[in-house]
Amino acid sequence: MHTVWKGAISFGLVHVPVKMFSATEDKDISMRYVHKECGSPLSYVRKCPVCEEEVGWEEISRGYEYEKGKFVLFEKEELDQLAGENNKNITILDFVDLKEIDPIYFQKTYYLSPDQAGTNAYRLLMEAMRQSGKIGIAKMAIRSKSSLAAIRVLDDCLSIETIFYPDEIRPISQVPNLPEKAEVNDKELDMARLLIDQLSTPFDPEKYTDDYRERLLDLINSKVTGEEIKIAPARQETNVVDLMAALQASIEAVKPIGTDPGTATKPRKKTTRKTAAKEPAAKASGDQTEPEGPKPKRRTKSKKTETGS
Image (cartoon, rainbow, N blue to C red; front, side, top):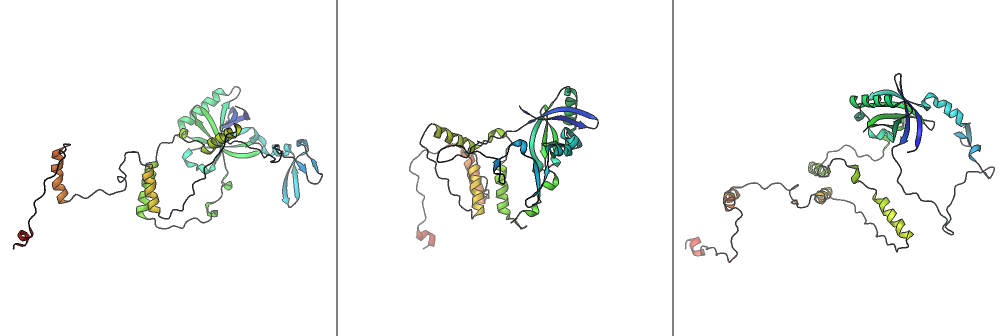
């Protein structure tokens, strides 16, 4: 793994020298823009529109546009000085319960490993956090950007996840067209909960795959080998009008094979006197079946007998 940052975790007067490595990687398939006419890849050029010439990295500084077309400029050294000690330190401010942090705050995960002679302090911090069940909330700076971070134990490794500051989370009140509070249909609610129950399972990340990426790789390989390519048109989605029917169809679709289609939704038949009288006879007969053959005809009373004439 490539080291993306070096510094130390500090909590109280304890310092733990660490190296930081990215815990995730982008598996997106990279594509370039290509000139259709000649097949050449296009390049991006840093060009000054006033001087009309290309600009090298050594001639570039950072600038903030405070008015249209007006900038204040900063050199890299100035921005590094602003970061100060945080540039090399992960300072733990508090220890909290992980369940208290909403997932909306999390950004990116990194692994931390001990650096130099920090193995003992690293092991001590990890074991203390494991036994306490707490995670550390810390401040740090990566690439001159100050970040909040959550330090926690993953197996036998310390991980750190950058998290947003509260003022970086947009309020829900800004979301348009949210439904107003209204009564929910009880039958639809029961069906929705039943569907959730049938889809509930322990989380297994290995079962989830990037289907689009796999299809794209197959398409790339087909094009490379010169195979004829036919892509089936996507099925057009239809607007669901009957919510109850959609819930019923969803439940039927996720039922295990061999399950009675009416088991989950149809109510049990009420036992009447007639069916109760028949049940003992049926049980007594067990699994025995009658030999096939013509069934005896039932004798019926004539109309004369019935009318008494």
